[in-house]
Amino acid sequence: MLPCADCCYGRHTARFPRPAMKTLGVILLSVGLNVALLYLNVRVFLSPPPPELAAPIVNRVVTNTVWRVARGGGSTASLATNPPPRIPFHWSQIESPEYPAYIANLRKFDCPERTIQNIIVADVSKTYETRAAELESTDDDPFWVSGSTLLNRQRERLARQRALEEERLRLLQQLLAIDPFADPRVTGRGSELMDGHSLERLLFYSHLAPAKRNAAERLMTRSQTQGEFLQGAARRAGFGHDEETARRQREARDAELAKLLTPDELTELRNRVAALELKYAGLELTAAELRGLAQIHARASGRVSVFDQLERAPAAETFERDVQALLGAQRWPDYLRAQESGFEKLLEFTGENGLPKLSAKRAFDVRAAAEKAAAAINADETLAREDAARLLRELQTATAGKLKLELGTTLAEKYFAQDSAWLRDLARPRPKQTPPPESP
Image (cartoon, rainbow, N blue to C red; front, side):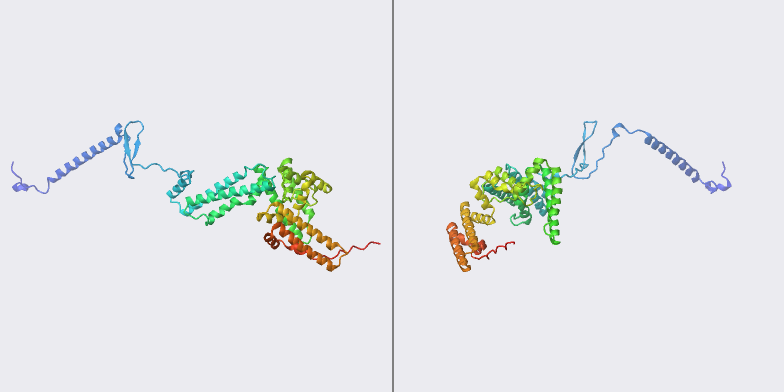
């Protein structure tokens, strides 16, 4: 075949280029491969995974602690590095029955040292307050005791409280780096153990159950506060003692107490209030005698007592007979002596200076005899004023000498320095009492 005119020398013309046929084939091949890959992807996506790959384990390194995790349904254990679940904080993680361990736990949680001290001081003090109350509750019938029995119990109570207080301070000194004797947080709490007012309340209401005890105390406190306010208002207004207001107040209080307490409880409470008004310094009374004396005073007293009822039996004329029947005729002078404030002071003075009770009785009898003699001299109308003054001075000197013999010179001088007004009054003449003119 002869070459054409356009194809001289065997060269192709631009009219039919060969590269066009090659590009078309590449395109067709690419389309086919893409279709095949798409088919494979769809098949893989729709196919279920193999059984062994259904629950793959993914290890994530979060901390340097490795925890062993057991998969359910299989015996093979695998390792994981997931952290443990957070455990909520509770105060029981810190508290301990042993104080050293308790303090160590607080410090482990970076609790400030002063806060630790406050916590331990409060906890220890509360524990010892409870122990002190338990010691007081061991006394049988603590209210109706008096005389040496009461004094001995008070001394024993103070000794127990001092021992508890010393034990508390030593414990705090061992546990904490503080001086418990100088730290106000410690000394302030310790004073509660020695609170005599709290002890008096405990003894006064000891016959009542705790719930009634608190309610009765609130009633008494409120009534006393109201009474003081009303009487103060009456005095400021110039009315003096308002008996009518006091009567209404007693009626309201007694009505509330009658709702709260049984009749026996209310009677016992009234007897205890009457006992608080008694004077029996130097008398050795049993519980039964003290209760009986309180009942006699409640019946015979002519003045308004805290719990006395409005209806009073006119028993004043039988008072001496009732007291002598209770105490005996020989103790009646002791009862009369106990009613004098001067004897109470003298009894306290002799006790503080180590003298027996008998010395106080004898010394007061010397004083009482001298005051009686001075009254007789002042009442003697036959004596001239100068003679009466001389006799009174002689009586004063003789009385001072007798007291020095009874108490000793040193203690007598000390007693005169504390209570000498009565001795000076012995030598002071009193004006004669002029009898009132007779009516026509």
